[in-house]
Length: 293
Image (cartoon, rainbow, N blue to C red):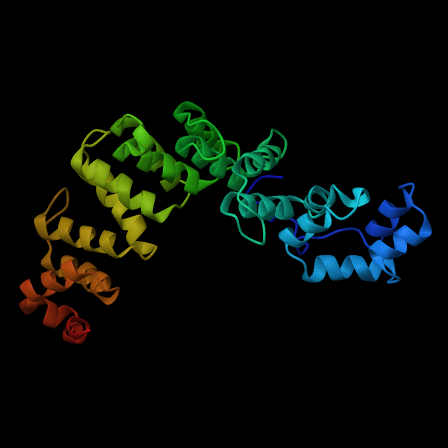
């Protein structure tokens, strides 16, 4: 199952109804010992109590009570499917849900989720972060970048592509800046409807950063991002028309785009409308209300 598919929706942590009864029966303990551990409650009721109200930390404590349930945490993660193992991995990474931080164990669960055949992209992305930051594993940028690459390609995770682009653009985690790779990954994510990447790739085209300078491509991608509600891209489209970069000069068209951005709170667009107020008051009569907000 790819990361884009919905993970198992079973509430986590979760166990089979007769889990405790089967585990106790499988051990060589006498009836008195069993009763002292699990009382006289039916096994299905007891299991529901544990999984309906317990956190991962509660199950971890229970695993130390008796050898029959020493693997209860892992069993709950496996029975609950991808969502349960993901939930447990995050709890171990962050030290939440009653668990102490154990990033090394978290990484082992993440690798199970991310292995070939699963392609669970959230785990791939998190492994990328772990290797880039040295969290639970020895810091290794090459492996970290590869996990993000896998998340973007095998896991079809557009956020991973955008994250790769930012890493190469700004040199995060000590990775060497590479504007060509940054532009490549911005385009990869933009083509898959990542709005912020659309705006970033448009800027690459506008400035000739990592790709040949091209006003037409810049306008195309700014417009796509603007039409999806990206405020700064609306401003950029307006600016292109005002400055006649690759298009006929049009203050009228510019005001329309500035107004859209101003409605979304873009301050530069509000300033532009004030500068073009003679045209704005004709094209968008209510623009002064936006300026006051």
